[in-house]
Amino acid sequence: MDRTLASILAREQRAYLARRRGAWGGHLEAARAFLGQGLKEAQGPALVLGAGSGLEVPWALAPPGTVGWDADPWSRILTFLRHRRWAPWVFQDLTGGMEALRATALRTARQPWSGRVRVTRAASRRLAGLLGSLDPAAGSLRAWIAEHRPATILSANVMGQFGVLAQRAVEEAFRGARPWNDEEDPLDAALRAWTARAVAAFLEVLAESGADLWLLHDRGVLFGEAPFRLGPLAEPWTAQLEADLPLEAEDPLCGVDVVGAFRGRSVEGHQRWVWPVAPGQVHVMEALRIRPAAMVPGRVPGA
Image (cartoon, rainbow, N blue to C red; front, side, top):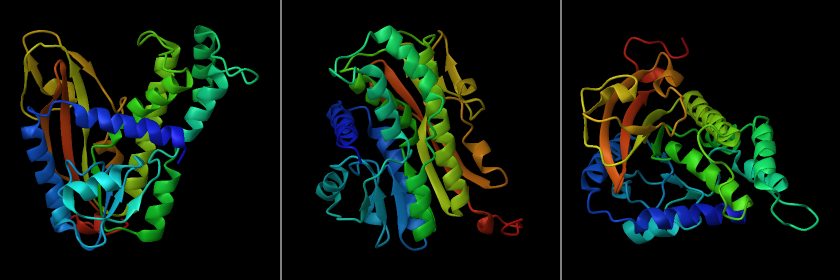
C-alpha cells in the first residue's frame, strides 16, 4: 500500500474518531447488533471488510480465525486496544484502484521537472479526462477471496468511503487544494463516475464470492439543519425522507443499486436508520443481509 495513501487513511480515521460521539449511541447499537448477528451466524472464520478501529464491529462474537481488512495502518492496533483481539489482518486497498488514481493525479497536478502544482483549472480538466480510463476492479479482494473462500463476509461501513478517499487523494496531489469548484465541474463528475465503478466492482466481487453477506453502508448523506424523519422503507432511499423543508442530499454510492447487484439472491433484514455524524451532517445508514444461492429456500445452487 502506498505510504501516502496509508497516511490519508490514517488521517481520515483520526478525524472520524475525534468527532463528538454523544449522539452516536443509536447508530452504534444498531450497527453492532447487525454485524454481531453476522458474526454469530458465521460458519467458520469470517472476513470483515472495513474493520477499522473496531468501533462498530463486536469482535468478541467473531469466530476464531476471523480476518480483518482495512488499509489504515493503525486499524489492527486500534482494534486490539479496543477488543484485546489480535486478529489476522489484510492491509490492502479494497477498490484496487486508489494507487492508480493517486499516481494519475500526481502526474497531472505537478510539473515533473520542478514538482510545482500546475495551473489548477487546466490540470483539473486534464485529470477529469484521464480518470475515465482508470479501472478500480477490486483485484486484491477478488484474489484473496478466491484463495481463502470465506463462508461469511461482513462489509462494515466501507463502501460509502470510496468517494471520500478518492477526493482526498486528488487533493493531496494538488498539495491540499481542492481542484474543482462545484457539482457541475468535470472533475467532480469524473470522480463520481470513478466512485461508481469502484462500488460496482466491489459488489461484483462479493456477488461472485458465494459467501453469506452482511452489508452495512452509508445509503445517503444529508446536510443542513432542516428536521426530517425516516418513513416506511421505500425506494429510492430519498422517498423515505419525510421533511417540511427541502433537504440537501448526497448519494455516496453515486447511483449504484446495491440490491440490484445481487439479482436472484434473498435479501433479508433490510433496514435503515439515521446517524448524526456531526452538526449539520446526518447519514442514512443501510443494512442488508444477502444470502448465497445455497441458502435460499427452494433454489438450486448454480441455477
